[in-house]
Image (cartoon, rainbow, N blue to C red):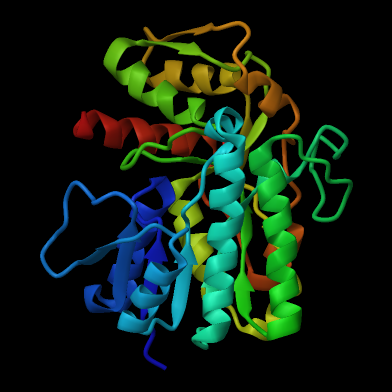
Length: 315
Ligand code: SER
């Protein structure tokens, strides 16, 4: 079957790079990007539509116009911004998902990708090597919306036979598009500031360990999950996905090996610390490895080298 893909929320950190990869795989004609904001650059042959995912009629018109076989729903408000605007975060993250799921049933669009997050875990979840199934008591509105979203995805899969696929992304590290409003954003900011000013004032404490993943692995993994035969997938809520776990002190050490003058300092009392403290430090992703052969390729060293090399050219 010829695939045609619509990405909703395509201008964000993950969407912008997934769009590149999907255009390469399926051709620009078959990948439609959409977002509430118009992108800064649109290359020739790229198709873009402005859309607010909360405007269900507009989303319906978009889907009727392009008749996609797959939808990637990436529009969401992340953890730190969510704490500033909890009602808006809940509205966007839940009703955006419900709009897409209901329209997918109405218009017979079977295959959907929707990202969950390590934010679905909470203070009573095991901290280290957090398993796929365990106590989940998220205490950020973002995490609560993602956990509810996971349950909806599994429910719609069971009840309506939608082929929804999902991963619990850790913090994603990338140099092309910056993240916005997340708790793991420090691990991207540190490179931008390190290269520009040789120093970084970190909003998380030195020993806060969080699970992270390099963008190249995240994009490849996402497409591999979407390509996997449906019968191999045993999880229809969302797969744990792991890459590299580290602390601000560890990544600063690694950056120093390439930028010897780099210095890190730490800010006290940032509200993102409490969010980070409620999340796992590392993740057990054995089910993803087993079901669809997931394997990350970047470690802390190779990721740091690649980030600095690319950012030096970019900046
Ligand atoms: N990167 C996200 C955040 O920090 C986690 O999914 O909010």
